[in-house]
Length: 410
Image 1 (tube, rainbow, N blue to C red):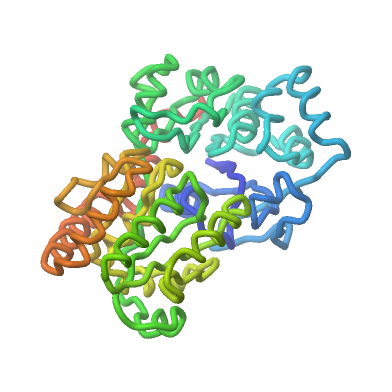
Image 2 (cartoon, rainbow, N blue to C red):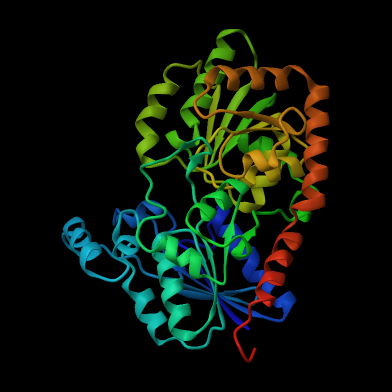
């Protein structure tokens, strides 16, 4: 089969959903399929609402036999007014035109002409789920819909993110199968009427080879210091608990604990002012900002961390936890997304409620002060990852499911 993968961003950016799609596209050849990734030209997701965001070139390339096509994000005049009108008038309006769904007219035109795909793998943003559904319906293709829904904690759902507005419940119900990244997300699908047999519980994985020989020396040179540190490697913002993590560390520094906090990855524009304010409240040099980390540099930095923390309510999965475990390190996650499925509290790491700074500080202090517990938790996490969470295992489960719903004649 020729499989179309839809995602809002792809190489050279390496985020959680982006990596998930890339690995599934690469794995297709192992099952006798070919893959095309259709995406945007955005490097920075701020481009979806701001014409000054960074872009990726070229428009088309082939990477390890996967064709990648990037469609240009546009910014029409009077865009807020245009969105308000179109989401009321056009089919799929709520899915296509609510912010932050971008304007990408080239993608729709291209899909209307394409007839060579037998299966569509639509991911992440509502406009892509809509385009995938429309294309699969009109071409009698198979369809896997993957919302990667960031909807908060199980008992404290986010109400201001419109993941399931518009046609999305219908799209999920009528897909060949809907992919949930966690048991929490699978429960949401059931609430929307998706049949249990149409739900595929997946999640992300890791490539063990990437973490077999991390370059620790290069990591320390990049960081510019020796000594223990807590690592947060994500796109830093309020909903990812970045402010809570800084406050937890500030309290520990005030009590004399000697460590640094490394914030690796980009800082969301809206979080910049809060970050600057918090930096003024902590001792100089205690917080290290790295900016975006290239794929080849991730393993060394992760391996050198004493603790990796993701106290986020915005991550549907949390692939950084798998990467930390692959390096034999313990983690601190939140009771949101897939993290309760992954973290066995007190065994391979700890879980905290989003915003619970006191508990977060306590768990950091416990791990920093007890090397034997750190090592034991890291080993337990590594064993679980190698047993259940390699990309080969994750993608094979997906393609076995695809094989069950091939279009007639395939």
